[in-house]
Length: 267
Ligand code: DER
Image (cartoon, rainbow, N blue to C red; front, side):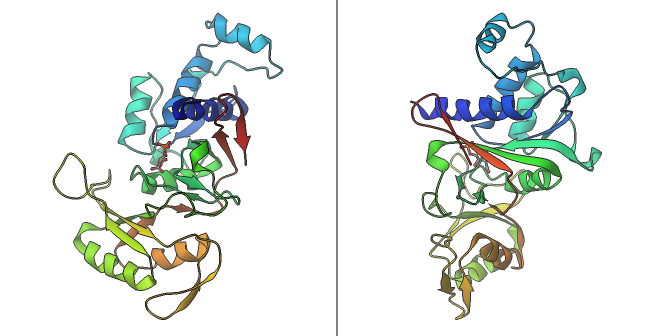
């Protein structure tokens, strides 16, 4: 099965399982998998008019309700997800309008067996984490290549870290001292210089190996536990760091489109 179909399967499963006629405020993540989340939401909004979808569903045991999209508000996590919401004619909301969001669906770059995730491959993790944090439910959707036992197993590009441009060098050198194995200021492809996030910041990708909870010795000669929570804490304390692409203990459930073309793994 293509990777694209695997993303679509995961996205459809999450929308069909968690969105219903009561859902009102929905956080929309960023990346390529979220495109299929929006695709399914729009289909479900036209449920009654969409005979084919209706008919197909009649053969399944899961009764899908039509989503009353006029009553729903969609909160973006990036310029990209904002454009997806607008271009699909969905109601756009702003994060500061709501204390709480009913549910947020988002992608990830890697997910471990404890539902911890590396996010930020698309350099959107600051707004993604803000939206996830005020969500009653945070759901991950991903293709089968994102599922790992421990973080750092498959995603070896490094943990995305948003930093203030003015002091990126300080943050860079502090990360080196922490003992990361690879360190890279993320450079743009079609522009000279670094990637600039939606918030006007830089991204440093720092690889700390597998976050398997073993003891590690930093270059500052401090021992630390190389676990997602400990590494997140150490990075977050560094001057110049705005946000870290480690989502620890935030996701309620994750859906992975499998290689076989139809099944979806659930964690
Ligand atoms: O940047 C992010 O965290 C995005 O959610 C992204 O990494 C998700 O990846 P995808 O393009 O495979 O959905």
